[in-house]
Length: 168
Image (tube, rainbow, N blue to C red; front, side, top):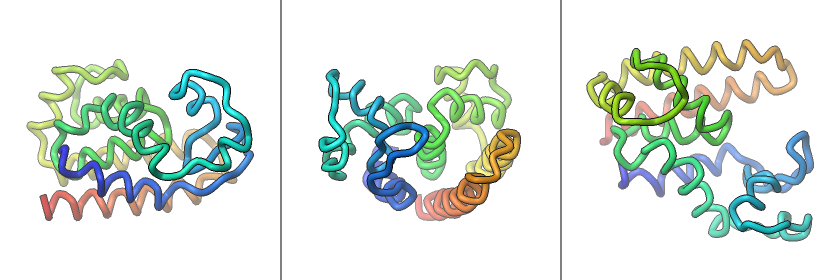
């Protein structure tokens, strides 16, 4: 839902950290240097990455993740669920997980058939199925260093999505 963008963005930032240099290179507020460079269409410096602010990355998150998952059109709670997972695991993985959860053809591309299958679901049941699929994906990665953090995020997002459904 369009109305959930601001809250979803704030919740997302509570899961993303400040500046680090990790496997993805320089990352700030959850945005890797490579993603930032795609967004600004030029090379970025480490100093630029360090200086990113929430207002800088908000339009990137909206365009690269929220919009690509059709979150403006999704039911309350499902929008945030899709958005957060798209940021964490990629848009295609988030859409694949949704497609598997609603019984749509799993091609990783959001389209009218996936959307139609989504909006006919009970949102609470869908959040449960989606979260279960997400958990299985994280486990399949066999990454003990990050698994606990992913599972904690999964629980937070699951619970916040349920609150959105109940308040939506």
